[in-house]
Amino acid sequence: MWISIAFVWTLALGSGLAVLFQPRAARRSALEVARQNALFMLTRIPLAIVGASFLATLLPDETVGAWLGGASGWHGVLVASALGGFVPSGPMVSFPIAIALMKSGAGLPQTIAFLTAWSVMAFHRILIWELPLLGWRFVGARLLSSLLLPPLSGLTAALLLRFLAGTP
Image (tube, rainbow, N blue to C red; front, side, top):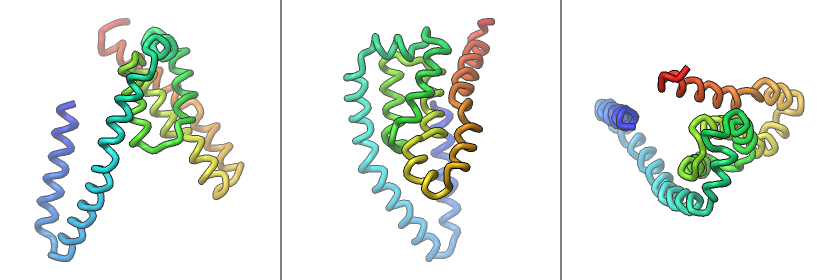
């Protein structure tokens, strides 16, 4: 976690220094964009954290553990892969849901499959954007070509975790 924090801060500070050497109009424009993004995030992140806390409290640990826990194995990865595609939200909701699932006992491979399915299979985006704009042929080809990605990501995560733990 500290590596990602250091990376983000290094990126932010480096970008800030680069903006200092730009013409005044570019600096003003960059600061305005930064201000708008900060206001956008500041109104959402606290609500997402509170919502995740409420959700983590409401989710029954034994049910989450049975369906999505580390011991649920391949079955849990498939369930998480199916659930993730039906979360109709953006990252401000789906990531707190993933955090709540993990706090309630979901395994890491299952959570990875959940987030991959949310990212790749988002059925709300298919209904609202892809189908009306790109048609059935495109949607069918995209869904069929990416259907295995969530379970494969969960399986890969499980294998990677076993490898890192030194378990054959």
